[in-house]
Amino acid sequence: MLQPGGLDQLGRNAIFVPETHMAKNHNRWRDLGDFSHHRRIAGQTIEPSIYSPRMQDKIQKQILDAFFIVLRPVARILLRYNIGFREFAEVAKMAFVDVATSDYGIRGRPTNISRVAVMTGLTRKEVRRLRDQLLDSSSITVKSTPLATIIHRWHSEDEFLNPDGTPAVLPFSGEETSFSALVRKFGGDIPPGAMRTELKRVGVVEEHDDGSVSVLKRSIRPDSQADNLCMSLSHGVYAHLCNVANNTNPERTEADPGWGQRTVFSADIRAEDLARIRRICNDRVFSSAESFDDLFMAYEKVSDEDDDSQGLRAVAITMCYFEEHDESAMSLWRE
Image 1: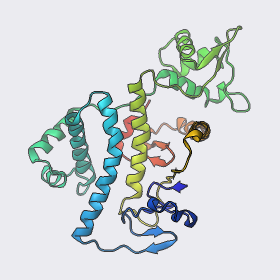
Image 2: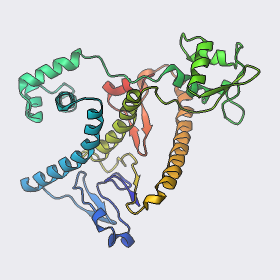
Image 3: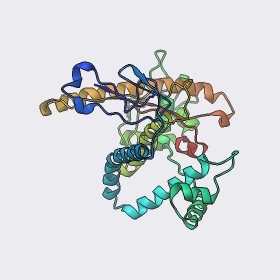
């Protein structure tokens, strides 16, 4: 079943259920509220209504109920790393203050402390403390490792590719079109020998009898589960939630088609079929990811020739489309 995560093809807030499934799966129909100028349900357009306070309370409860579902795995992850509610609450308050300050200012200026306090329900003293803390804290950066950079460039730079576009088997030494040249160009100050040893250790490259090196995998999994968690949150969950925030923005106009988002689900798979389903789905997810990576790399070559880094933007695919428009979050995407 195709379930757009609460959004139809144009990013509207509705879930389409085929008529043949309505009787059996009637509980899958959810009217998630009118977060846009109008919504489409089963091909019908419903004009927005003016909410009464009671209706607004109902919508807020509906949203909070949905966030309770979202926060359960968040709590599971935090507790796994011995992070309790107080630490989470502090980070949550900082996020509220940060967004209220930056998104709701007047004439391009940050929102004043009193308005932020009213919007967030925090005291002015607390808002001032959190804003000072935000100013003093260093920006959050999730850097890709030199290993990941080398593998990425090996798949994208013409001089290290075969005529069919696949990564070439590289001689270890040489001024051009060699593994050493690749490392000198994109590996920073890491010696080629050390880079080869580490890439072999993580099983990403293979060294042949003649000393040449070939790449075996397209991606490198972070060494620690904590690193993997941070990468998944900042490049996956973050992008997905930004997609939802964009598509459910009531100020979005009809001229903006929204960002694509789709979720496919079924609640009728037999337990004995799960292993087969999992394998097929994993294969297709990885294949799709590689095709999108090819697309991004093609455009990276164009941007590499442009010295204007201020004009660059981050995009991501996590079974949804995403564009980074928050300048303060661009550090998440820098190598």
